[in-house]
Amino acid sequence: ANREVLVKNDADSYIQSMDIYLSLKEKYFLVWMAEKLFAQTSDLAEEGQCVSRIAELLRYVKDQMVYDQCIGQLGKIYGKTRLWRNAVEQIRNNAKKTRTTG
Image (cartoon, rainbow, N blue to C red; front, side, top):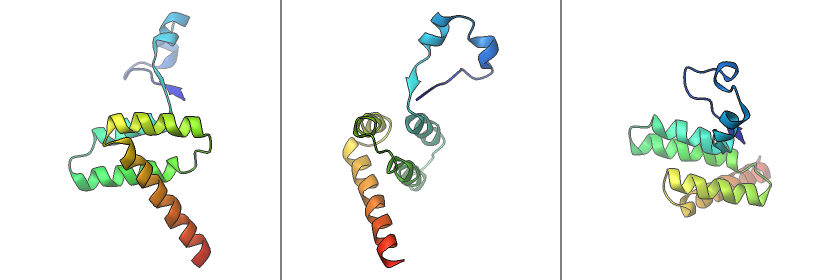
């Protein structure tokens, strides 16, 4: 998980107290990345590429609690949790096929 400092503020000048640090919302990197990627999309094709890119990374998350939390948060950013679960499952299945045939 990470905390994002607002644009044009580096951590040294912005975070001057524990209260300021604690006020920064903590989120998982994949969720943060999804927010940034989806903010730059302009059509369905780009949105599909974002889903694939995030799902490709999400398949490596082994902790079930973290995985479920990420899926829930991603469902709020784009689509529904079912879309994200299906995307990850498809990528995992494709990776298994590649390993067995390659």
